[in-house]
Length: 197
Image 1 (cartoon, one colour):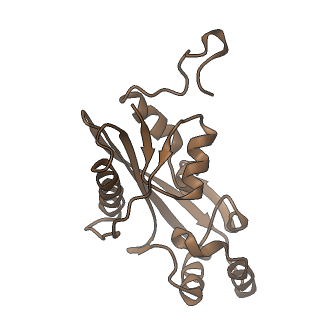
Image 2 (cartoon, rainbow, N blue to C red):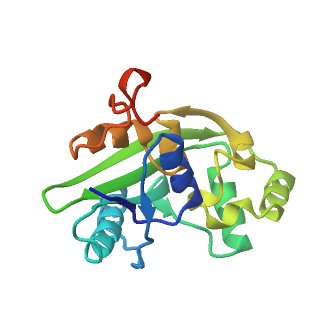
């Protein structure tokens, strides 16, 4: 069964490649929606992406994902402009926030939706650090205006939970879920040498 990632996120693509998954990319063109809770928002958006791509490739297994940043009751998406990025980073400064990724797996025989939540603790950020970081351009296509795997990682004091989830895909949980669809990167396909990894 062909595996298709319903995302053009470079971070998700890199993570799936890093862990030996063979897949095709077909980004979903669906508007992101809000829901009653952050978890429902991430799950709903992930499922909408997977369903949109599944309609085009009904014989495939589709992975849809959506990552959001939550502080208090506010959901932080990608910043709309420089001022929005400044606002978000000031809001995160010196505080704990949650990163939630919803994942939807969709095939002709089965559907699974899961979410993973990670707590991220930011140190206090000086305004000049925020300005310099924004000038790097890194924040503009990231939920919450930062990339933990990039320069933004310098702002993270600690995390509690899955690191890969903060990057954009909870890989350990995804690999377990994929086994339910018959995909296992640790199989013995390669004989004594091991599987795909």
